[in-house]
Image (cartoon, rainbow, N blue to C red; front, side, top):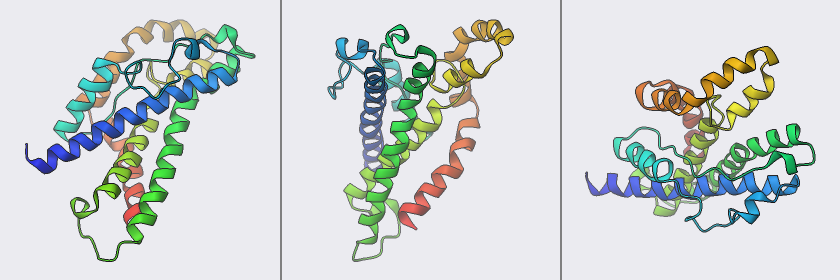
Length: 216
C-alpha cells in the first residue's frame, strides 16, 4: 500500500471512530432527555472512545473497508437504553433510535458547509482531491463518513436504527415473522454490505451530490 492510500485510510478510520462515538452519545443524550438515565449511569455520555469501541464494528470492519477501497462503515457498542424509564416508551424509544442517524446528518451538513467555504477561499486552483490542504480533506472525509453512517444506520436491518422504524410500522400479525428473522440481522447485513453492491448503489448518488456541493 502506498503512502497516499495509507494516509487516506488513516483519515477515514479516525473520522469514522469520531462519528460513531458522537452517534452513540446522541442516542444516550436523547434518552436522557426522554427520562432514561441508563446511558449516563453506564458512563456512555463521554467523548472518551474506550467505552464505545467495539472491536469488530469499530476496528475490523472499518479497516477492511478502508484498506479495500469500499464504503467505510462501522458501529460502536450500543448505548444501553431502558424504554420503561421513558415518559412515553413507544414514542420515545423511536425518537432515541433515530437520534443517531439524525446526528450524522447534522454533522455531515455542518462539515460540508465548512469544507465548501474553505475550498472556495483557496487562492490557487486544485485539480484533484489529494492536492487539497489536509484540513479540507479531513473535513470532507468526515462529511462523507457521516453520510455513509446516516444511510447505513437507516437500513431496515436489525440491529441498525432503521429496524426500529420497521418494528413500529409492521402490522401486529407480521411481528412474529419479524422476530424470527431478527437474530440473523448481522448475517444479512454482512451479505448486503460486503457480498453485494446494494449499499454502494444506494449511497452513490448522495455521495456525488455531496462532493458537487463541496468542490463544485
